[in-house]
Length: 453
Image (cartoon, rainbow, N blue to C red):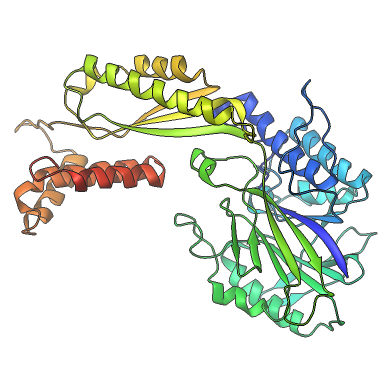
């Protein structure tokens, strides 16, 4: 048996990122790019010719897996619903079934009879899979085309797909129960089995809680050929078995660095000799909005004028580099870009002299971006505290940290500066600063000699 299918997840239709309408449209464009690849048809949109991306990966496919989070939130508007219907109708008209599970972003409210994913299933646009769970007991039923519900579906002879909705903290229990049920199912020779769920794998995203340990997924190893996941936006493939395609469009600016990302195409051939791989996985990269974040340290600017001069040179250089990247023949990122500038380090002059509006104007003049954002995680050179004033929580925190550093002979000499550095790193983490920016800040502190931390 031979077949080809496309695996996608985390589309997040309806997300108006930064409050910008064009970002709302970007998520729809990324979804339609996935549909283009699944059908092998690239229609013109918004007056622009179709974009033939990833030429080494061709369509059409036999079916599509959508592993949750088609929508960004439970309450969607008519425009978002229309975006979903138009894309899914293209698949249906091409004879390509879309098999899906429900993600955490689109779960129905407790007092609602059905959610929007169930609505799409009732419209014969998706095949929505899930199991019936009652405590530790899990029951599966074949897909019922009349009731438009079921736990497993066979898009073609020899292929069976099982599905599990987002279960949150109960995911581990549900997967274990599912493994027990699958172990009892009869399997014919040459059959190919897929398990699809909206869940992650521990360790694949450092700041993302809720992933199962690999050993928990391993309970499905003997019963499945392919695990199709969604939920984590970072792509990964583990042992050519547990696969996550990543989000087609960037829901945060740090996702822009995760490439290739957006979809996977799997070519299945169960007629291979014993011991040979039963499938081949192709990683695709969907066209998306160009997004970049840059970090600039303010330590070496002796005055506001010097800072503006240094920033002007820095931003113009980065803008030229980005322009060259986006003009490369293989580039598929759309413009104008989204740009975030992070100011870090110690500000060697009064904070009130830092003109953020002027810096935002520099970003706009350098990049002509769709969105330009300036974020500060800088520290002032001093923290004056009057004796007759109440100590603030932040100052108390700094003093505690300074005391801890004083106890360590390695840091005692510069305890005050190390304490300020620790507070700065904490503020960056709380502000959602990308991990690589925080690492740059740490490395900068480590490279500075004593008395200059």
